[in-house]
Image (cartoon, rainbow, N blue to C red; front, side, top):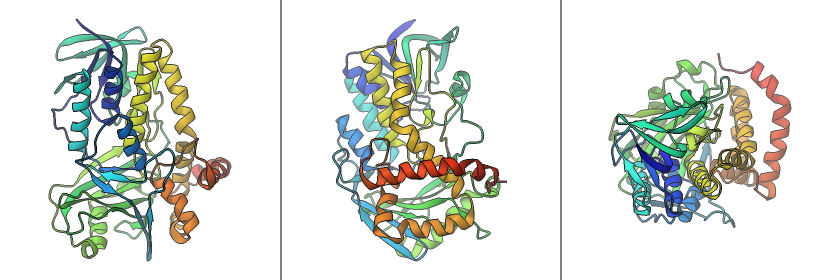
Length: 405
């Protein structure tokens, strides 16, 4: 039986970040990934300034990424282009980095730090009573003092540990493909906030054009589960509809690959327990207002490894409390907000307001860029605090009258 200090299940950004930090601190680390090296992950590929800041903390160079200086928001006829703000916490730029290359850069750094990577190896936690004591993979058993669960959307591991999505809470679905465009080197992400389905119903979500700087653009759409008839929503039709809106302005060619969809979990029933911690998507750390979670994945992975290295015995509960303090208030506000915009008439009028004035558009920019959390100073932080209190009062009504069938 091989023994490690830390085992990580999943080699995405969250798992790789945990492995990098732990290995650099001199811990023995194993990472199990069910796919092979060069794995692709269906994703929008956009990196917020927050994500870039986390990558800089990890010492990951962004030479292979396309720099993004801001966000272009579209709501009907209204277009507002804003630069990422200069803050003391995050750099004033983001990036687009296709996940195949981003994830490879992160696992290469983990390997260089001393972590062992087990590719094409599906790992399942092994238990001693209620405590996770390692994993089983490739017909063998591997033991460790701690297991970091970085498995993305809920699956078998989440079911075993009780880390599944909370029933009744919102989640998202998204779909993307790549197209060629002469605007592939554009330095702004573009988000169209006013989407409608094939029946003309307003969709809580947005369409995006994320220029990759390599001749291609990542084009996609995402939607929240709080809309009416969400189960009948056809993502391929929604993507085709959005494509019609941007075809001329971006001069796009045919799809370069078949559009692929994925699920966005936005809650988790548990994110820690004896001998384990869940990070990133597996912990439900996704912004309900933009579907983004790479930055939260990097931060939570780093945090889990740091706390484990400091004190293995207290790491799970300290991790749970630290993640809660940093993210929970904002993410709760986002989930409540998603029930609000699940009502079409509120959605239509609210989005006009979101980009209608410079001051409110700056707050929208902060929300879309994951730049707001419990430590955010200034107007954006105050507005979100007030919004959370107001939505807390309205939340029971919003849920009872939710548009979703």
